Image (cartoon, rainbow, N blue to C red; front, side):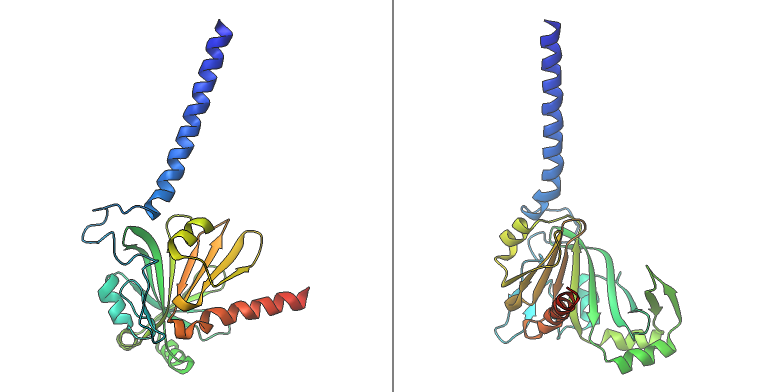
Length: 241
């Protein structure tokens, strides 16, 4: 009789543990399927979602109310909030790029980190670096260079060419395909990483089994900005084998 009660207790404990795991998984995944109304004050949970990409039929697109290649950095600030951190991000030996970074921004009911890359020539960036106020090292040897106020004002009027988004929840490939549709191309990088390419939408989604997913948007007419680096990576990989 005692053994029977012990067996029942163990069974109940296992069931509770399974229920708890299922609840945690649901809490992570469900927000990507069902809007959470009123979660973010003043934010419509049903608009500006990552998969709501509008195409103009002429090679342009709009996502989060931003048009890559058309909208300026100032437009982004007005649309997504003034809490954007703007700086030149540079690797050693490179001019770098002007980027605007949000540590946390609600995109509909999805919370994410978001980076916009400003469309500026190397000459413009180099000149801004010479007038920059300060620079500090980020991870590894990457440098973050603070712009002079005059150059920051100039950057506000420049168009952005790309948008990068890292959602707060981890996504698997099945979930992504359900939301974005079947990709035009699937590029396997490793056992844990794969790129889902959507040329017609100007979108590349990196699915990472060991980290956060990365969504990159450009105007469809400029999809080569996303595809060419991947092609170069493929060629390098092939040459080394």
